Length: 445
RNA sequence: GGCGCUAUCGUCCAGGGGUUAGGACGUGAGAUUCUCAAUCUUAAAACACGGGUUCGAUUCCCGUUAGCGCUACCA
Image (cartoon, rainbow, N blue to C red; front, top):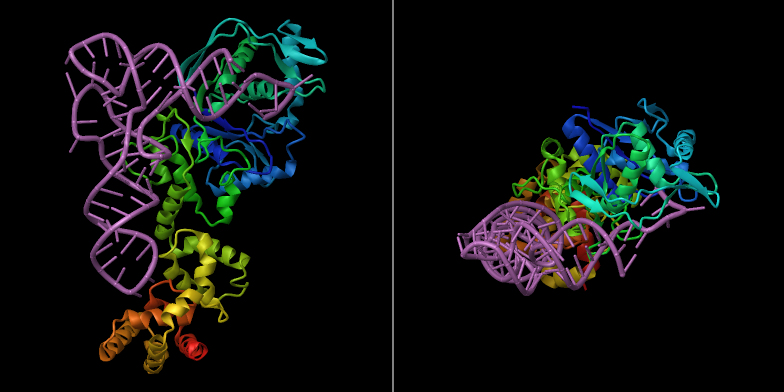
Protein backbone atom coordinates (compact mmCIF):
# COMPACT_ATOMS: atom_id res chain seq x y z
CA UNK A 1 0.00 0.00 0.00
CA UNK A 2 1.44 3.30 -1.08
CA UNK A 3 1.85 5.99 1.51
CA UNK A 4 -0.86 8.65 1.58
CA UNK A 5 0.01 12.08 0.22
CA UNK A 6 -2.57 14.85 0.50
CA UNK A 7 -2.33 18.53 -0.22
CA UNK A 8 -3.96 21.76 0.79
CA UNK A 9 -3.75 24.35 -1.96
CA UNK A 10 -4.95 27.81 -0.94
CA UNK A 11 -4.62 31.06 -2.84
CA UNK A 12 -2.87 33.96 -1.11
CA UNK A 13 -5.74 36.41 -1.23
CA UNK A 14 -5.15 38.03 2.13
CA UNK A 15 -7.85 36.26 4.07
CA UNK A 16 -8.15 32.71 5.32
CA UNK A 17 -11.67 31.43 4.93
CA UNK A 18 -13.30 29.23 7.52
CA UNK A 19 -14.17 26.75 4.76
CA UNK A 20 -10.53 26.63 3.69
CA UNK A 21 -9.64 26.00 7.29
CA UNK A 22 -11.91 22.99 7.38
CA UNK A 23 -10.57 21.66 4.09
CA UNK A 24 -7.05 22.04 5.46
CA UNK A 25 -8.13 20.37 8.69
CA UNK A 26 -9.67 17.35 6.97
CA UNK A 27 -6.58 16.91 4.79
CA UNK A 28 -4.38 17.20 7.84
CA UNK A 29 -6.51 14.75 9.79
CA UNK A 30 -6.36 12.21 7.01
CA UNK A 31 -2.60 12.58 6.65
CA UNK A 32 -2.05 12.19 10.38
CA UNK A 33 -4.54 9.34 10.63
CA UNK A 34 -2.81 7.37 7.92
CA UNK A 35 0.74 8.39 8.78
CA UNK A 36 0.93 10.08 5.41
CA UNK A 37 2.27 13.39 4.17
CA UNK A 38 0.50 16.74 4.30
CA UNK A 39 1.60 19.11 1.56
CA UNK A 40 1.06 22.86 1.40
CA UNK A 41 0.92 24.21 -2.10
CA UNK A 42 0.36 27.84 -2.98
CA UNK A 43 -2.07 28.40 -5.84
CA UNK A 44 -0.98 31.82 -6.98
CA UNK A 45 -1.62 31.60 -10.70
CA UNK A 46 -4.05 34.50 -10.65
CA UNK A 47 -1.66 37.42 -10.41
CA UNK A 48 -4.47 39.94 -10.28
CA UNK A 49 -5.91 38.56 -7.05
CA UNK A 50 -2.90 37.14 -5.24
CA UNK A 51 -0.08 38.89 -3.50
CA UNK A 52 3.12 37.21 -2.37
CA UNK A 53 3.01 38.87 1.03
CA UNK A 54 -0.36 37.30 1.67
CA UNK A 55 1.26 33.89 1.92
CA UNK A 56 2.05 34.89 5.48
CA UNK A 57 -1.65 34.90 6.29
CA UNK A 58 -1.82 31.27 5.21
CA UNK A 59 1.15 30.31 7.37
CA UNK A 60 -0.21 32.14 10.39
CA UNK A 61 -3.68 30.70 10.08
CA UNK A 62 -2.50 27.13 9.66
CA UNK A 63 -0.07 27.43 12.53
CA UNK A 64 -2.67 29.04 14.75
CA UNK A 65 -4.94 26.06 14.12
CA UNK A 66 -2.09 23.69 14.82
CA UNK A 67 -2.04 22.23 11.34
CA UNK A 68 1.59 21.52 10.56
CA UNK A 69 2.65 20.58 7.06
CA UNK A 70 5.38 18.20 5.95
CA UNK A 71 6.14 19.65 2.53
CA UNK A 72 5.89 23.10 1.07
CA UNK A 73 7.11 26.62 1.77
CA UNK A 74 7.95 27.45 5.37
CA UNK A 75 7.45 30.72 7.25
CA UNK A 76 11.21 31.20 7.57
CA UNK A 77 11.59 31.24 3.80
CA UNK A 78 12.93 27.73 3.45
CA UNK A 79 11.19 24.95 1.57
CA UNK A 80 10.55 21.42 2.74
CA UNK A 81 10.07 18.47 0.43
CA UNK A 82 11.51 17.14 -2.81
CA UNK A 83 8.56 17.77 -5.11
CA UNK A 84 8.83 21.53 -5.34
CA UNK A 85 8.62 24.25 -6.19
CA UNK A 86 5.43 24.44 -4.20
CA UNK A 87 4.22 27.76 -5.54
CA UNK A 88 2.49 27.56 -8.87
CA UNK A 89 3.93 30.86 -9.98
CA UNK A 90 7.30 29.09 -10.10
CA UNK A 91 6.15 26.08 -12.06
CA UNK A 92 5.42 27.67 -15.42
CA UNK A 93 7.91 25.50 -17.26
CA UNK A 94 6.31 22.30 -15.99
CA UNK A 95 2.86 23.39 -17.13
CA UNK A 96 4.19 24.36 -20.54
CA UNK A 97 5.70 20.91 -20.93
CA UNK A 98 2.35 19.28 -20.26
CA UNK A 99 0.54 21.61 -22.64
CA UNK A 100 3.12 20.91 -25.35
CA UNK A 101 2.67 17.21 -24.85
CA UNK A 102 -1.06 17.50 -25.39
CA UNK A 103 -0.50 19.73 -28.40
CA UNK A 104 2.00 17.39 -30.01
CA UNK A 105 -0.26 14.41 -29.51
CA UNK A 106 -3.19 16.24 -31.08
CA UNK A 107 -5.17 16.23 -27.83
CA UNK A 108 -5.19 19.99 -27.64
CA UNK A 109 -5.35 22.78 -30.17
CA UNK A 110 -5.00 26.50 -30.47
CA UNK A 111 -8.10 28.64 -30.68
CA UNK A 112 -7.96 32.46 -30.83
CA UNK A 113 -4.57 32.33 -29.14
CA UNK A 114 -5.72 30.18 -26.23
CA UNK A 115 -5.07 26.46 -25.97
CA UNK A 116 -8.06 24.17 -25.68
CA UNK A 117 -8.15 20.55 -24.60
CA UNK A 118 -10.33 18.23 -26.64
CA UNK A 119 -12.73 16.96 -24.04
CA UNK A 120 -13.90 13.40 -24.68
CA UNK A 121 -17.66 13.29 -25.25
CA UNK A 122 -18.23 9.85 -23.79
CA UNK A 123 -19.84 9.17 -20.39
CA UNK A 124 -17.50 8.98 -17.42
CA UNK A 125 -17.73 7.83 -13.83
CA UNK A 126 -16.13 9.84 -11.07
CA UNK A 127 -15.38 7.64 -8.08
CA UNK A 128 -15.57 9.59 -4.85
CA UNK A 129 -14.71 8.28 -1.40
CA UNK A 130 -17.45 10.35 0.21
CA UNK A 131 -20.10 10.71 -2.48
CA UNK A 132 -19.76 7.35 -4.21
CA UNK A 133 -19.65 6.75 -7.97
CA UNK A 134 -21.04 9.66 -9.93
CA UNK A 135 -21.83 9.52 -13.65
CA UNK A 136 -21.39 12.42 -16.01
CA UNK A 137 -22.72 12.43 -19.53
CA UNK A 138 -20.22 14.51 -21.45
CA UNK A 139 -21.93 14.68 -24.82
CA UNK A 140 -22.38 18.43 -24.62
CA UNK A 141 -19.20 19.18 -22.72
CA UNK A 142 -17.31 22.02 -24.38
CA UNK A 143 -13.58 21.79 -24.91
CA UNK A 144 -11.64 23.07 -21.96
CA UNK A 145 -9.35 26.08 -22.09
CA UNK A 146 -6.08 25.04 -20.48
CA UNK A 147 -3.93 27.99 -21.40
CA UNK A 148 -5.00 31.61 -21.74
CA UNK A 149 -4.22 33.87 -24.62
CA UNK A 150 -1.54 35.51 -22.50
CA UNK A 151 0.17 32.15 -22.13
CA UNK A 152 -0.77 31.52 -18.49
CA UNK A 153 -2.20 28.12 -17.58
CA UNK A 154 -5.67 27.86 -16.02
CA UNK A 155 -6.61 26.29 -12.73
CA UNK A 156 -7.81 22.92 -14.02
CA UNK A 157 -4.53 22.29 -15.81
CA UNK A 158 -2.18 23.37 -13.04
CA UNK A 159 -4.19 21.62 -10.41
CA UNK A 160 -4.03 18.31 -12.23
CA UNK A 161 -0.38 18.65 -13.21
CA UNK A 162 0.68 19.53 -9.69
CA UNK A 163 -1.22 16.67 -8.13
CA UNK A 164 0.43 14.30 -10.59
CA UNK A 165 3.91 15.75 -10.21
CA UNK A 166 3.65 15.83 -6.44
CA UNK A 167 2.41 12.23 -6.29
CA UNK A 168 -0.74 13.24 -4.50
CA UNK A 169 -2.71 10.10 -3.68
CA UNK A 170 -5.90 11.63 -2.25
CA UNK A 171 -7.53 14.87 -3.30
CA UNK A 172 -9.68 16.10 -0.42
CA UNK A 173 -11.41 19.32 -1.34
CA UNK A 174 -14.68 21.22 -1.24
CA UNK A 175 -17.74 19.88 -2.96
CA UNK A 176 -17.73 22.87 -5.27
CA UNK A 177 -15.12 20.93 -7.25
CA UNK A 178 -17.19 17.79 -7.61
CA UNK A 179 -18.69 18.84 -10.93
CA UNK A 180 -15.23 19.77 -12.20
CA UNK A 181 -13.61 16.48 -11.38
CA UNK A 182 -14.53 14.76 -14.63
CA UNK A 183 -12.49 17.40 -16.42
CA UNK A 184 -9.52 16.59 -14.27
CA UNK A 185 -9.94 12.89 -14.89
CA UNK A 186 -10.04 13.53 -18.64
CA UNK A 187 -6.81 15.49 -18.48
CA UNK A 188 -5.11 12.81 -16.41
CA UNK A 189 -6.19 10.17 -18.87
CA UNK A 190 -4.79 12.22 -21.72
CA UNK A 191 -1.48 12.42 -19.88
CA UNK A 192 -1.56 8.66 -19.51
CA UNK A 193 -1.29 8.95 -15.76
CA UNK A 194 -3.02 7.29 -12.83
CA UNK A 195 -5.55 9.53 -11.09
CA UNK A 196 -5.55 10.18 -7.36
CA UNK A 197 -8.52 9.17 -5.26
CA UNK A 198 -11.06 11.91 -4.71
CA UNK A 199 -13.02 12.91 -1.62
CA UNK A 200 -15.32 15.91 -1.83
CA UNK A 201 -16.34 17.36 1.47
CA UNK A 202 -19.54 19.38 1.90
CA UNK A 203 -19.51 23.15 2.07
CA UNK A 204 -19.96 25.45 5.03
CA UNK A 205 -23.01 27.65 4.63
CA UNK A 206 -24.15 30.83 6.36
CA UNK A 207 -26.79 30.46 9.08
CA UNK A 208 -29.38 31.40 6.46
CA UNK A 209 -28.27 28.63 4.12
CA UNK A 210 -26.50 30.74 1.54
CA UNK A 211 -22.94 30.05 0.53
CA UNK A 212 -20.48 31.56 2.95
CA UNK A 213 -18.32 33.95 1.04
CA UNK A 214 -15.38 36.11 1.96
CA UNK A 215 -17.42 39.05 3.04
CA UNK A 216 -19.82 37.13 5.26
CA UNK A 217 -19.74 37.54 9.01
CA UNK A 218 -17.57 34.92 10.65
CA UNK A 219 -15.91 33.74 7.47
CA UNK A 220 -12.39 34.80 8.34
CA UNK A 221 -10.07 32.84 10.60
CA UNK A 222 -8.24 36.02 11.60
CA UNK A 223 -11.52 37.31 13.02
CA UNK A 224 -11.61 34.45 15.51
CA UNK A 225 -8.02 35.02 16.45
CA UNK A 226 -8.70 38.70 17.11
CA UNK A 227 -11.81 38.06 19.17
CA UNK A 228 -9.91 35.81 21.49
CA UNK A 229 -11.22 32.43 20.44
CA UNK A 230 -8.96 29.55 21.32
CA UNK A 231 -7.59 27.72 18.28
CA UNK A 232 -8.27 24.33 19.82
CA UNK A 233 -11.91 25.27 20.20
CA UNK A 234 -12.26 26.50 16.63
CA UNK A 235 -10.56 23.37 15.38
CA UNK A 236 -12.77 21.16 17.53
CA UNK A 237 -15.88 22.88 16.21
CA UNK A 238 -14.70 22.50 12.63
CA UNK A 239 -14.18 18.77 13.17
CA UNK A 240 -17.85 18.50 14.08
CA UNK A 241 -19.02 20.09 10.85
CA UNK A 242 -19.45 17.07 8.63
CA UNK A 243 -17.80 14.54 10.85
CA UNK A 244 -18.79 12.89 14.09
CA UNK A 245 -17.18 10.58 16.65
CA UNK A 246 -20.58 8.86 16.69
CA UNK A 247 -20.79 8.59 20.45
CA UNK A 248 -22.64 11.85 21.08
CA UNK A 249 -19.62 13.68 22.40
CA UNK A 250 -18.85 17.20 21.27
CA UNK A 251 -15.67 18.24 23.00
CA UNK A 252 -12.84 15.89 22.24
CA UNK A 253 -9.07 16.07 21.97
CA UNK A 254 -7.57 16.32 18.53
CA UNK A 255 -5.53 13.15 19.07
CA UNK A 256 -8.75 11.24 19.31
CA UNK A 257 -10.11 12.80 16.14
CA UNK A 258 -6.89 11.85 14.36
CA UNK A 259 -7.29 8.28 15.56
CA UNK A 260 -10.92 7.99 14.48
CA UNK A 261 -11.10 10.17 11.38
CA UNK A 262 -11.71 8.54 8.04
CA UNK A 263 -13.06 9.68 4.71
CA UNK A 264 -16.05 7.38 4.11
CA UNK A 265 -17.81 8.60 7.27
CA UNK A 266 -17.68 12.22 6.31
CA UNK A 267 -21.19 13.60 5.97
CA UNK A 268 -22.41 14.42 2.49
CA UNK A 269 -24.72 17.32 3.29
CA UNK A 270 -23.64 20.94 3.57
CA UNK A 271 -23.49 22.32 7.09
CA UNK A 272 -24.57 25.70 8.35
CA UNK A 273 -22.20 27.61 10.51
CA UNK A 274 -23.44 27.90 14.09
CA UNK A 275 -21.59 30.60 15.97
CA UNK A 276 -23.50 29.85 19.18
CA UNK A 277 -22.11 26.37 19.31
CA UNK A 278 -18.58 27.55 18.60
CA UNK A 279 -19.01 30.06 21.40
CA UNK A 280 -20.09 27.30 23.74
CA UNK A 281 -17.19 25.04 22.78
CA UNK A 282 -14.83 27.94 23.25
CA UNK A 283 -16.19 28.41 26.74
CA UNK A 284 -15.53 24.75 27.48
CA UNK A 285 -11.93 25.12 26.37
CA UNK A 286 -11.55 28.45 28.09
CA UNK A 287 -12.59 27.12 31.46
CA UNK A 288 -10.47 24.03 31.09
CA UNK A 289 -7.41 26.02 30.02
CA UNK A 290 -4.61 26.75 32.47
CA UNK A 291 -3.70 30.31 33.36
CA UNK A 292 -0.34 29.83 31.70
CA UNK A 293 -1.92 28.81 28.42
CA UNK A 294 -4.28 31.76 28.16
CA UNK A 295 -1.99 34.38 29.66
CA UNK A 296 -0.38 35.39 26.34
CA UNK A 297 -3.78 35.74 24.71
CA UNK A 298 -5.07 37.77 27.66
CA UNK A 299 -2.04 40.05 27.72
CA UNK A 300 -2.28 40.81 24.04
CA UNK A 301 -6.00 41.55 24.08
CA UNK A 302 -5.75 43.74 27.17
CA UNK A 303 -2.82 45.66 25.73
CA UNK A 304 -4.66 46.12 22.48
CA UNK A 305 -7.59 47.60 24.36
CA UNK A 306 -5.39 49.82 26.47
CA UNK A 307 -6.36 48.13 29.73
CA UNK A 308 -2.76 47.41 30.62
CA UNK A 309 0.61 48.64 29.46
CA UNK A 310 3.83 46.76 29.04
CA UNK A 311 4.69 46.73 32.71
CA UNK A 312 2.32 44.48 34.58
CA UNK A 313 2.90 42.83 37.91
CA UNK A 314 2.74 39.19 36.80
CA UNK A 315 1.54 37.86 40.14
CA UNK A 316 -1.28 40.40 40.40
CA UNK A 317 -2.18 39.87 36.75
CA UNK A 318 -2.45 36.12 37.10
CA UNK A 319 -4.49 36.40 40.26
CA UNK A 320 -6.95 38.67 38.48
CA UNK A 321 -7.04 36.56 35.35
CA UNK A 322 -7.66 33.37 37.26
CA UNK A 323 -10.81 34.62 38.97
CA UNK A 324 -12.15 36.21 35.79
CA UNK A 325 -11.39 33.23 33.60
CA UNK A 326 -14.01 31.13 35.38
CA UNK A 327 -16.72 33.53 34.35
CA UNK A 328 -16.20 34.18 30.68
CA UNK A 329 -16.10 32.25 27.45
CA UNK A 330 -14.22 34.46 25.09
CA UNK A 331 -11.04 36.51 25.19
CA UNK A 332 -12.91 39.50 23.90
CA UNK A 333 -14.77 39.76 27.20
CA UNK A 334 -11.54 40.29 29.12
CA UNK A 335 -11.18 44.08 28.79
CA UNK A 336 -14.54 44.83 30.38
CA UNK A 337 -14.02 42.30 33.10
CA UNK A 338 -10.47 43.25 33.98
CA UNK A 339 -10.40 47.00 33.66
CA UNK A 340 -11.20 47.53 37.33
CA UNK A 341 -8.07 45.67 38.40
CA UNK A 342 -5.84 48.17 36.65
CA UNK A 343 -7.75 51.44 36.66
CA UNK A 344 -9.41 53.47 39.39
CA UNK A 345 -11.21 55.81 37.02
CA UNK A 346 -13.86 53.38 35.82
CA UNK A 347 -17.45 54.36 35.11
CA UNK A 348 -20.24 53.15 37.36
CA UNK A 349 -22.99 51.25 35.61
CA UNK A 350 -25.75 53.89 35.87
CA UNK A 351 -28.67 51.51 36.10
CA UNK A 352 -26.99 49.43 38.76
CA UNK A 353 -26.01 52.53 40.69
CA UNK A 354 -29.62 53.63 40.80
CA UNK A 355 -30.70 50.27 42.07
CA UNK A 356 -27.91 49.51 44.51
CA UNK A 357 -26.58 52.83 45.79
CA UNK A 358 -29.72 53.56 47.77
CA UNK A 359 -29.45 55.22 51.17
CA UNK A 360 -29.44 51.74 52.71
CA UNK A 361 -26.87 50.50 50.23
CA UNK A 362 -24.58 53.44 50.92
CA UNK A 363 -25.02 53.00 54.64
CA UNK A 364 -24.00 49.37 54.22
CA UNK A 365 -20.91 50.44 52.34
CA UNK A 366 -20.01 52.65 55.26
CA UNK A 367 -20.46 49.84 57.73
CA UNK A 368 -18.44 47.52 55.55
CA UNK A 369 -15.64 50.00 55.24
CA UNK A 370 -15.39 50.37 59.01
CA UNK A 371 -15.47 46.66 59.49
CA UNK A 372 -12.99 45.75 56.75
CA UNK A 373 -10.62 48.44 57.93
CA UNK A 374 -10.17 46.21 60.95
CA UNK A 375 -8.55 43.54 58.81
CA UNK A 376 -4.89 43.84 58.09
CA UNK A 377 -3.28 43.04 54.74
CA UNK A 378 -2.53 39.50 55.80
CA UNK A 379 -6.14 38.78 56.73
CA UNK A 380 -7.60 40.36 53.63
CA UNK A 381 -8.43 36.96 52.14
CA UNK A 382 -11.55 35.60 50.54
CA UNK A 383 -12.24 33.34 53.49
CA UNK A 384 -11.84 36.09 56.11
CA UNK A 385 -13.79 38.56 54.03
CA UNK A 386 -16.65 36.15 53.70
CA UNK A 387 -16.76 35.75 57.47
CA UNK A 388 -16.87 39.51 57.93
CA UNK A 389 -19.66 39.96 55.40
CA UNK A 390 -21.74 37.23 56.98
CA UNK A 391 -21.13 38.49 60.47
CA UNK A 392 -22.12 42.02 59.52
CA UNK A 393 -25.21 40.75 57.74
CA UNK A 394 -26.17 38.78 60.83
CA UNK A 395 -25.80 41.65 63.29
CA UNK A 396 -27.65 44.07 61.03
CA UNK A 397 -30.38 41.55 60.22
CA UNK A 398 -29.85 41.70 56.49
CA UNK A 399 -29.20 39.24 53.73
CA UNK A 400 -25.59 39.13 52.72
CA UNK A 401 -26.61 40.21 49.23
CA UNK A 402 -27.55 43.63 50.62
CA UNK A 403 -23.85 44.09 51.38
CA UNK A 404 -22.39 42.25 48.43
CA UNK A 405 -24.05 44.16 45.64
CA UNK A 406 -23.17 47.67 46.75
CA UNK A 407 -19.65 46.51 47.49
CA UNK A 408 -19.19 44.98 44.06
CA UNK A 409 -20.44 48.06 42.30
CA UNK A 410 -18.29 50.30 44.49
CA UNK A 411 -15.06 48.45 43.78
CA UNK A 412 -15.60 47.50 40.13
CA UNK A 413 -18.27 49.77 38.71
CA UNK A 414 -20.13 46.73 37.43
CA UNK A 415 -23.09 44.73 38.71
CA UNK A 416 -21.53 41.47 37.56
CA UNK A 417 -18.11 40.05 38.17
CA UNK A 418 -16.14 37.30 39.80
CA UNK A 419 -16.94 36.01 43.26
CA UNK A 420 -16.90 39.18 45.36
CA UNK A 421 -14.73 37.86 48.19
CA UNK A 422 -12.09 36.74 45.73
CA UNK A 423 -12.38 39.99 43.86
CA UNK A 424 -11.74 41.95 47.05
CA UNK A 425 -8.81 39.74 47.98
CA UNK A 426 -7.15 40.24 44.63
CA UNK A 427 -7.77 43.99 44.59
CA UNK A 428 -6.28 44.24 48.06
CA UNK A 429 -7.07 46.19 51.17
CA UNK A 430 -5.91 49.61 50.05
CA UNK A 431 -7.86 49.70 46.79
CA UNK A 432 -10.96 48.25 48.36
CA UNK A 433 -11.14 50.66 51.27
CA UNK A 434 -10.51 53.72 49.18
CA UNK A 435 -13.03 52.68 46.55
CA UNK A 436 -15.68 52.00 49.17
CA UNK A 437 -15.13 55.43 50.60
CA UNK A 438 -15.15 57.04 47.21
CA UNK A 439 -18.47 55.48 46.24
CA UNK A 440 -19.99 56.41 49.56
CA UNK A 441 -19.08 60.07 49.09
CA UNK A 442 -19.81 60.26 45.43
CA UNK A 443 -23.31 58.81 45.59
CA UNK A 444 -24.50 60.19 48.92
CA UNK A 445 -27.01 62.97 48.45
C1' G B 1 -31.91 26.55 -18.54
C1' G B 2 -28.53 21.94 -18.45
C1' C B 3 -25.72 18.73 -15.25
C1' G B 4 -24.33 17.13 -10.29
C1' C B 5 -24.78 16.72 -4.89
C1' U B 6 -27.97 16.89 -0.65
C1' A B 7 -32.60 16.41 2.47
C1' U B 8 -33.72 13.58 10.70
C1' C B 9 -35.71 18.99 16.10
C1' G B 10 -34.33 26.34 14.65
C1' U B 11 -28.78 24.56 14.06
C1' C B 12 -24.90 20.60 14.19
C1' C B 13 -24.53 15.42 14.53
C1' A B 14 -26.24 10.01 15.78
C1' G B 15 -29.60 6.18 14.25
C1' G B 16 -31.78 2.92 10.91
C1' G B 17 -36.91 -2.19 7.55
C1' G B 18 -40.48 -3.00 13.56
C1' U B 19 -37.14 2.49 18.31
C1' U B 20 -40.81 6.06 23.71
C1' A B 21 -36.27 8.45 16.75
C1' G B 22 -30.87 9.75 20.71
C1' G B 23 -27.07 13.65 22.01
C1' A B 24 -25.23 18.72 21.77
C1' C B 25 -25.94 24.11 20.90
C1' G B 26 -29.79 27.51 21.30
C1' U B 27 -34.78 28.47 23.65
C1' G B 28 -38.61 28.06 28.03
C1' A B 29 -39.33 26.67 33.33
C1' G B 30 -37.23 25.39 38.07
C1' A B 31 -33.07 24.44 41.78
C1' U B 32 -28.41 26.40 43.67
C1' U B 33 -25.15 30.73 44.37
C1' C B 34 -23.19 37.35 46.54
C1' U B 35 -24.04 38.96 40.74
C1' C B 36 -22.70 36.63 36.32
C1' A B 37 -20.84 32.18 34.43
C1' A B 38 -20.83 27.19 35.64
C1' U B 39 -23.66 23.07 37.56
C1' C B 40 -28.27 20.15 38.32
C1' U B 41 -33.52 19.02 37.07
C1' U B 42 -37.05 19.72 33.46
C1' A B 43 -40.04 21.25 28.96
C1' A B 44 -41.02 22.30 23.90
C1' A B 45 -38.79 20.89 19.28
C1' A B 46 -37.49 16.68 13.55
C1' C B 47 -37.59 11.93 9.83
C1' A B 48 -39.74 17.75 3.18
C1' C B 49 -43.89 15.79 -0.13
C1' G B 50 -45.96 11.87 -3.43
C1' G B 51 -45.62 7.14 -5.31
C1' G B 52 -43.65 2.25 -5.16
C1' U B 53 -41.05 -2.49 -2.79
C1' U B 54 -42.49 -4.91 1.88
C1' C B 55 -46.57 -8.05 6.61
C1' G B 56 -44.34 -3.36 7.97
C1' A B 57 -40.66 2.42 5.51
C1' U B 58 -38.26 7.78 8.68
C1' U B 59 -34.66 3.92 6.83
C1' C B 60 -34.48 0.78 0.20
C1' C B 61 -36.14 2.51 -5.09
C1' C B 62 -38.45 6.30 -8.31
C1' G B 63 -40.47 11.06 -8.87
C1' U B 64 -41.62 16.11 -7.01
C1' U B 65 -40.06 20.15 -4.30
C1' A B 66 -36.38 22.87 -1.96
C1' G B 67 -31.24 24.14 -0.85
C1' C B 68 -26.34 24.17 -2.56
C1' G B 69 -22.66 23.55 -6.32
C1' C B 70 -20.76 23.39 -11.41
C1' U B 71 -21.84 25.19 -16.17
C1' A B 72 -15.25 31.31 -17.01
C1' C B 73 -9.33 32.55 -21.12
C1' C B 74 -11.64 32.72 -11.62
C1' A B 75 -9.61 29.39 -8.22
